[in-house]
Amino acid sequence: DTFFRSQLGVSLSFMEEMWARNLGHLFVSPLRPYELVLSMFAMSLLRTLIGVGGAAVLAVPIHGFNVVAELGPPLALFFANNLLFGWSLGLVVSALVLRLGLGAESLAWALVFLVQPVSAVYYPVSVLPEPLQWVAAVLPPAQVFEGMRGLLLDGVFDGARLLRAFLLNLGWMAVAGTVFVLLLRSARRLGLLLQVGE
Image 1 (cartoon, rainbow, N blue to C red):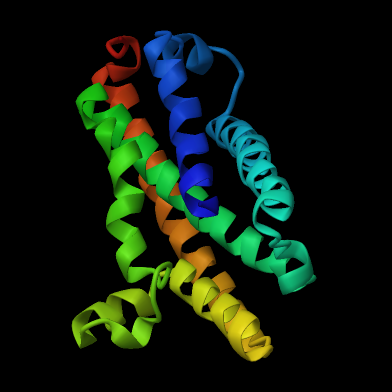
Image 2 (cartoon, helix red, strand yellow; image 1 turned 180 degrees about the horizontal axis):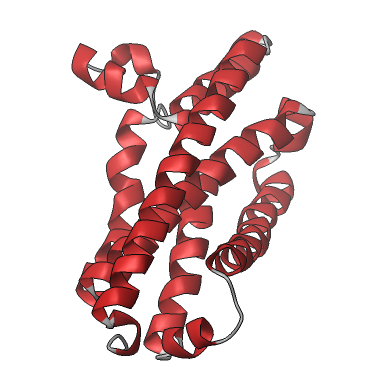
């Protein structure tokens, strides 16, 4: 849920600016693209903390499950890695919506559900067919969920797996940032910033 909410937080923050026809106003101001991205990340973090935090708090009295007590301090690292991956997806979705128009906004809702089955969310990577295991190997959430599974079931914290997730996230973030900047430049050149809206 963390990388879904973080991705949606970035995508929705961007699409709200598009729906309000505010992008042209934003980019004639002194606002730099990286400042817009940082503000989308901040909104995403707040939305994710409220959504996931609320669910975690309610899980204690309703289900008798305290995720913080079960996973301990590594939970913050797992959370951060899923958050980073969600932000990467959100940047790519935002860039595609900017370039292709609001017809592509369904990507904001669907993309995570395409990624989840190969991210070891529901079952271990080992049960996937071999080609999908290769896909899972480059997805940070697969490393995170396998690490969480090992910690919950075996009581073993695999720091190498978490480091691998972080390094993969750096790569995903670099690609997402590059795609966002390139498509933003293209949208500026084609005059798309003033042509988008509801």
